[in-house]
Length: 465
Ligand code: PXG
Image 1 (cartoon, rainbow, N blue to C red):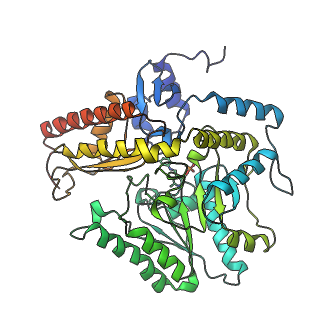
Image 2 (image 1 turned 90 degrees about the vertical axis):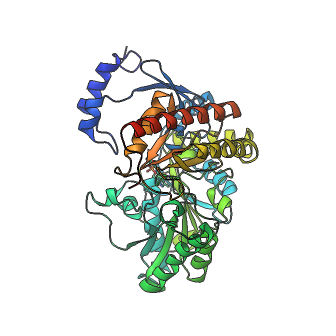
């Protein structure tokens, strides 16, 4: 028997993991001392760990398992494709049927004239592609100086050198000499934390107009594109004020700036439409996709590209860019089957019309708790802000994330996987979540928040900073 089918007990797995496995976004020594959680299997919305505990996964893995765990159809398609053609590339004038079939399907599903796809293995890779695409596009149009990409602080666009540079995470820029040149960051539309006395609508306009100010300052002839997540995900599920995206769209149109919507989290039903761009009225020139494209069953990402941009690139000689796994046949076949399930089972319509509104109503009730200052959701993504002084939207006196981490641990103790970003708690559950599941989720979340509240009070942390 191999180690996967017949594995050693948890403590031994933890020790082996600590000895040989470096984890993303993790303080290795701290994790080794604590012992990592080993997830063994999953079905529907439920994870089972190596000790047999069952947890509701309100994060859909890392925002990706949109159709839920355990769909045999995807496993069958993967096995069939591995037997038929496990690998071939899409370089040097070759292709294969799964890549063609997925490209057609994506052109049909993605709104507007984004009819071409450049495949990647992940969202980070796709955003690297986007940087090269937009610069190559403008160079091909005789404007090689249009190179700067404007992004936002607290954005997340991935973890490669270029994608992390596009992102606006200070903690990431602090390591490894980021950002690369010609990336410019403006402020985020986070009304809760930064809106002060402005109404959300006023604040949304003010933040969008920073884009226009930046373009004027840097020079329209130097700016290639603006990139943004419709809802900032890893930044804490920051749902922008309604005024924000229409103003961003107006500014991009008025100044000949390409608009890149990073749909890695918002795409494939998360917000109750196929794409977050539809929920927020964005008409992007390029769209980054990954995660929900395959529901995480296989690694795949891509850039959806408008007819205009793709046409210019097609006539500009070789585009000297690509990945061994661009359009990988097994990943493409799995993605296609995932899209079939999303479509035929009407999962996105259900989120839009039924379960999304139900979640919104239940989730909002959490704001009745004395430590919850805000609780918002759109479709199947939501967040809440923990605060010791709700009316002032005040942070805790302790370093950001102290209380959030306590709450996250209380969630796990209550068999709920809910993440924290600073002192915001976030959810992004599978789209198959039913109304009884939502009741369970919100019940466990309330319990965890209340236990956190009692701990925080007992520890003297319930004061504004
Ligand atoms: N864009 C967005 C909007 C993302 O959320 C990426 C790009 C990068 O995708 P890849 O496939 O390269 O990881 C992401 C990924 C978190 C977390 O802690 C979020 C992501 C990845 C890992 C952790 O919330 N988002």
